Image (tube, rainbow, N blue to C red):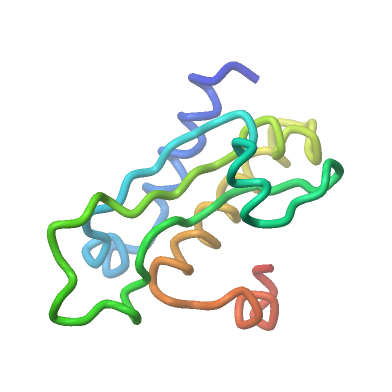
Length: 122
């Protein structure tokens, strides 16, 4: 899939986020890359066969205090080639993008990986 089409799917997924959640999103960038960079893979202890579909990097809302400010934007990265390695049909890719966007936004709100799995979003 062309990068422009994949980015369109990301924009569509973001547009589907309920308004009350969108209003709470501040100082956050959403990007697309092919795969995690080597330093990210090492930091997360990913093996060569491990696929990471998305990553939230930042300070979750639940961990911010009065000293939080003047920081770079939090970042959500979707890994296009990793998603495409698991899903080949356009509709499946679209669903995976949406699920990954929601999953990473949940991390922004402070929802941990275990809780996301319990909710069926892991």
